[in-house]
Image (cartoon, rainbow, N blue to C red):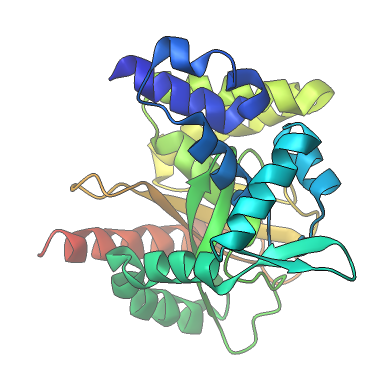
Length: 278
């Protein structure tokens, strides 16, 4: 299983260009064509919902000829819609239904939402739930306080792992070997920014060990402050993270450390207990 996991993780971070030649030699069960097709679907985001073959080639690292065959096939299967006037593609209902079914069937989301809303109402802040997607996170649920003025992010929005409280929470909760592996890939993409990012991640690990939550104050967005707490269900169904935040003019570091962070950690403990059936 080690080789299979390594191949999947390398595909996730380095992309199909790096894996297209080497995957079969390592794992004959790994279907490259399927991985490439899924990579095309993953290229569509709330911010980039209409893409052409050239843009898809740039995002996936695949040759344009390969992309053309994949988009043709995915269109025939009902996962993409082709706009002939623009000569571009969007996700079709077939693809959307897959994501919707996954969200609906996430038990953690169903259990967490009432508790998230309770915390959002009490703190008048925004509380969100996310899950890792490569080196980013995807928002899968959100609750907002009545006067919350935090940057509005839609479900499906991607956030960076290294600079957000939610992402740092995932890194802090990861086993040391996995965290080092993720950090090595973050460093590869960060370039000259890596020393500052590494320092922030190491501080987050220390904060999590001492306080039970991580911080990000002006490091993702200069005007956003937040706390983050991971959730690792005992059934192995995935690793999740929560955050609670607001603009810095409404939420100081002291408030996060003394109030928001502890409340968020307590909320996650309730979710954990509910998932375990207690």
